[in-house]
Amino acid sequence: MLNHNEIIQTITMIKDLHLDIRTVTMHISLFDCITDDADRTAQKVYDKLTSKAKNFVSIIDGIQTKYGIPIVNKRLSISPISLIGAASGGYEKIALAMDKAAKELNINFIGGYTAIVQKGMTKQEEEFIHTIPKVLSETDVVCSSVNVGSTKAGINMDAVRLMGEIIKETAEKTKDKNCIGCAKLVVFANAVEDNPFMAGSFNGISEGDCVINVGISGPGVVKAAIERIKGEDCSVLSETIKNTAFKISRMGELVGREAAKQLNAEFGIIDLSLAPTPEVGDSVGEVLEEMGLSSVGAHGTTACLAMLNDAVKKGGSMASSRVGGLSGAFIPVSEDIGMIRAVKSGALGIDKLEAMTSVCSVGLDMIAIPGSTSAKTISAIIADEAAIGVINGKTTAVRVIPVIGKEEGEVEFGGLLGRASIMNIGNGNADAFIDRGGHIPAPIHSYRN
Image (cartoon, rainbow, N blue to C red):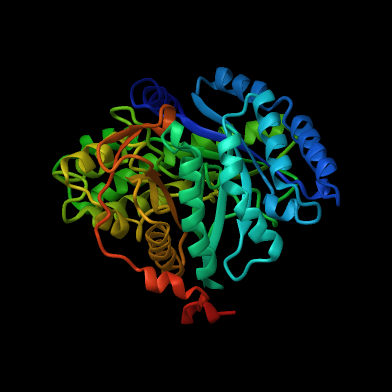
C-alpha cells in the first residue's frame, strides 16, 4: 500500500522528472487464426485484433486520467507471423491486416512480424524473412524482429548473413523516409517472449491468449535521486538507484494490474528498463554522467552502466514478483539526448557501445551508420552482438539504420525515435567469415539440464 509520502514523491516524479509509463502493451495469441488460405488467415487476424483490443486505448486513457500517470504508448504484440502464416503463405496480406487493425484501434505500433530461427530455418521461415523489406516499406506501424541466436542453440550464421542483406534492402526501400524501415526491425539473440518494447516485441509461444505487459521509464527520476547524494560512495549510489527503481516499479504494477482487470486479460510482467527519450532530463546517458563520468564513453562507462542495470533490477524485484521483459537500461543512441551529445563530440564510438552492451539491456540500438556500409559488415555487427548474448546468457540485439546517400552528419526520425549522428564503423571487414555461413555451436555452459 502506498503511503502519503510515496504519493507525494510519485506526483513530483511525474510533474518535474519525466516519469511515465512508456508503454502498456497488449499481447495477443493468434494461433487460433491459422488456416490454409492466406486471405482467410489475414481476415481472422484482423477480426481477432479488432475484437480483443476494441476497448484497449479507451481503457488505458481512462487509467491515465484516473491515476494522473502519463502513459505514452499503447501497443499490440502478437504471435510470430512466421508461424501463423506458415500453412497459408501470404505473409504480406497478414501484415497489411495487422497495420489496418492497429490504425483503426489507434495503436502506436504492433509487433510480431517475427521469426525465431536460432538453430535453423524452414523453407517457410526463409520465405517469410525475405518479405520483411517490402512489408516495412508498405506499412506504417508494423514492427519486425528475427532471433538468430540463443545460449541453448548457438548462432545461425546463415540467418545472420541473410539479415545483413535484409537490413540493406529495407533501407533501400525506405530511403525516401531516411531509411526508417530499419528503425522498425531488430535482430536478436536470446529474445524474450514477454517484451513490451518495440521493435522487438512479440507474443511468445508459451504466453497466454491475452496478456498485459507494462514497460516503465524514469531516467530523469534516477538522475534527480543521484544528484542528491553527490560525493557518496558506490554502496550508497547503488542503494539510491535501487530505492528509486522500487518506487517506479510500484507505479508500473498498479497500472498493469488495473489494465488487465478492466480488459479481462492476464497481467503479465512489468519491464524495468529505463527507457529514454530525446527530451533533456530524460536520458540514461545523463544518469551515467551524474554517476561520475565526464561524458558517456569515458573509461568507467561500462562499470557505471553495470551498476545502474543491477540496481534497477534489484529495486524492481523488491517491488514486484512479476518482473520480466528485458529489464535494465536501454542505450539507444538516437532516443537519448546524452548519448546523442556524446556521439557528436566524439566521446562515444561503436566499439565502446559494443562493450557497454555486455552489461545492459538489449544491444546496439537505433544506431545510424553510413549508407555505403555493406550487408556483410552489418552481418558481422549482428554476429558480434549475438556472440555477446549467447556467451553471457543475456538478450542482445542490433537495430542499425544504414542511411542511404549519407556518410556523415545527422538524420532525423521524429517522435520518440529522435535523431542520430551517423557513426563511423571503421574500415575492416569480416566478409570471408560471414561467407562461411553454417552454425556457431552453443557454448559449453549451455549443456546444463
